[in-house]
Image 1 (tube, rainbow, N blue to C red):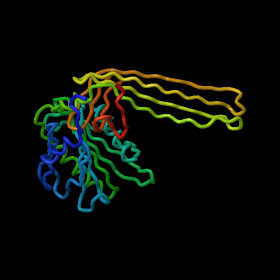
Image 2 (cartoon, rainbow, N blue to C red):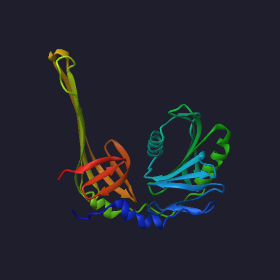
Image 3 (cartoon, helix red, strand yellow):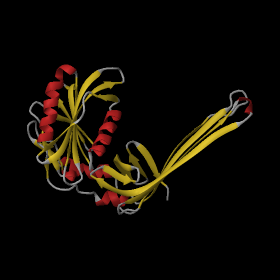
Image 4 (cartoon, rainbow, N blue to C red):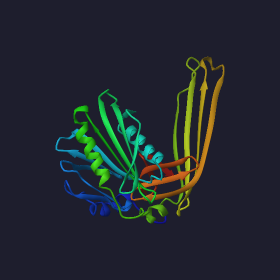
Length: 286
């Protein structure tokens, strides 16, 4: 395969060059050309994909702030990333007030507050700031803390957003864009044995996505379900299909696709015979 490589290994060298600055220093997302200042009393506890996790000396037991760049041409794009983040963390969020728009260093910004709840029912205060740059990118900063620590967390989120510096447009990863060239398939299905007493059921779901290696993609998906009634007296089923097409790019290890149905982003790994996007494995189909 042309341009065969493991993206995560290739990015190890660049990751070494972007080690976070010490508390109070400036750190960056080099491929996105964005940087910010880590507030005093906070430190980068973890880097995963395009997200920095900031913690206090209490670690993950205390307030937590997530900082991440994105292809945010509008606050709707930033909101989609925020919603995706809530889901990944297993949280449900309810706005506590209307979002407030403002400007930061001449750039559009929006602030929002939420009451977040995890799957165990623990309530947290969430404070989020989104800043849109002139280059179709943005920085999303969101913090979570118990109510008695929400003021400290909120002030730190605001300081991070206000410290944003933009060095220019994002830098696409041409090797990754080319390495995606080809047709990839994801399949999931399940069937139960059909018996006269219990009947049976089966379902299947598959996706095909094809990248041209220079920035365009096509996509098709189909799903079907079949149910056989007890006594084998009848079978019912249904099927549906979807398609899309548009453009794609890769910034660092983030795949960004924009089609008729809007924009989506995925944490990406490219292996010789498969692609892993947000944990879902696609096998080469050609």
